[in-house]
Image (cartoon, rainbow, N blue to C red; front, side, top):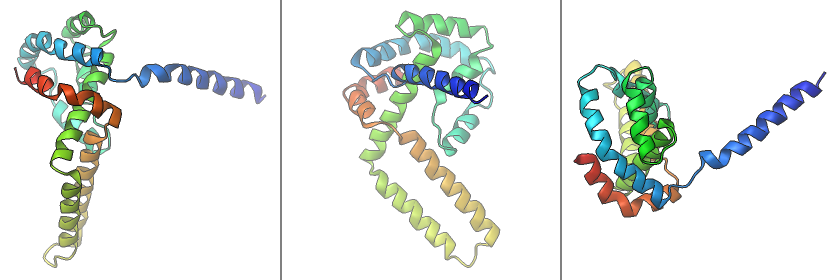
Length: 192
């Protein structure tokens, strides 16, 4: 009787191990170049998307996910777009730049954004920001003018903010190293 669950577990483990190389693909120069090239084409689509209500509360969902420790804004965007007629057009555009699926493009984009954010925070010394937040929490804790409920709520908000910051900067060192030479080009491409 235990053979079947064990067989199912072993099969699932083999599938997971086979998928790991695809999940953990390094951010190669070619992949970053394809991402940068895709941004120009996607600008045209973004202008049309802005005229719809397709994304509604997406910003709030991204913030909530970051507070819960997950920063994947482009994956959220693709989920919102999935049932819209522009999804096919988006998929075709990213496919022209070598991404097999929109999710592949989103994974690359999210990793690049985390690496850029991590570089930015390191530039502004992330430890200083966290120390400042810890000091604020300590001051709040010792303030007699703040009620117990207010302290609890404020502590939760600060903990969520710290978790969000960690999620946005939780980039592997290899991703940061890969993105660093492209930082200015990516910024220009995103701002054009």
